[in-house]
Image (cartoon, rainbow, N blue to C red):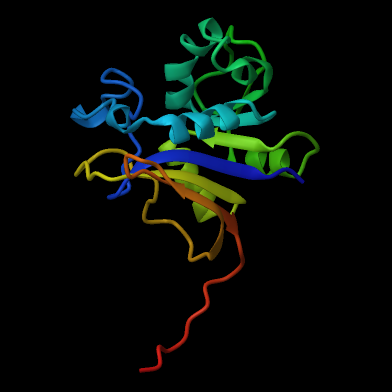
Amino acid sequence: MRKIIVLSMVSLDGVMQGPGGPEEDTAGDFKYGGWVAPYGDEVSGEVVQKELSQTADYLLGRTTFEIWENYWPEHADFWPGINNGTKYVMSRTRKKSDWKNTVFIESLEDIKKLKNSDGSDIQVWGSSKLIQLLLANDLVDELKLKIYPLTLGKGKNLFGSGVIPAAFTLTESVVTSTGVIIANYKRAGKVETGSIEI
């Protein structure tokens, strides 16, 4: 069985849209594209390079895929793995792409079959609707979050209304010099409750 790992940059109010640049994703009249740029430092750079150097396959929503397919094939020097890994793209409208190692899938059942197959871990980047589908169906094994010290008010969110109650264990964390919390969480069973003794 393969692990599905969600990697996301997120604001304090849960927005994950357009972190990389002003024109990356302006859907819904989003005006804050590139909001992570002021928060870069050596620590965050090292974490990103480590993530990009991991051997993985990728599960992407159609919108994220279409943002990436004209960019990353020309920038293999920065992220070689994205071209070499298989990109599984959830779409009912796209069937083919010139980007090598791209496979289109259509359903939740396709994702479950993929998860139960042999191969590398599967990383999910961007793809807010896809992440919400995965969380709602308990298919996320790990969350690798970079939580930025700002609120954006509106935009595509990491967590939607269909997320199931689930417990996670913090496995690694660091705070950067610019206040970004980098935290890795592993799925850890059911939510437990109790009373606080005073």
